[in-house]
Image 1: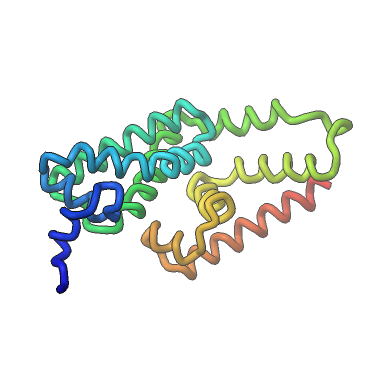
Image 2: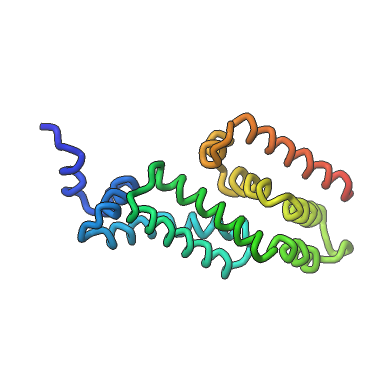
Length: 193
């Protein structure tokens, strides 16, 4: 006998529900809504914080963004839901909130200064460390939107297709931006040494 999806969700524990099942519980305002949100939060907390940290580079700012994102997601679910994949919505919200915080605090300028002042002197650096320093500086000088692409592609190992879907862009445009970023980074490496 085939079990109806709603009935099967009731039979499962909240930890076994997929994200969209948890979202439905939260949206319904049922008695289990808060516990469903706790499960969703525990699933996504590390990824949301990780994305924010890779963009913002400070623990405090990343924690602030994570709290803001989860609060806004909870409110959105209580207002009637999220009409897309919950994970994609969380990650896009994290990216947007992180970029908004950077714009408000001008953290990008401070991050470049921090990287420049904490590097070792040229006599102390070996080849690999020098390359890493040059790349770090070059990535920090990228506009925020391009820096996000670097984080998504090279730190979170997202494909161009996944990045395009999350950002609402074409895969071709994402690939072009990634190519331009690689060319800019290679140019910075050539100019450095």
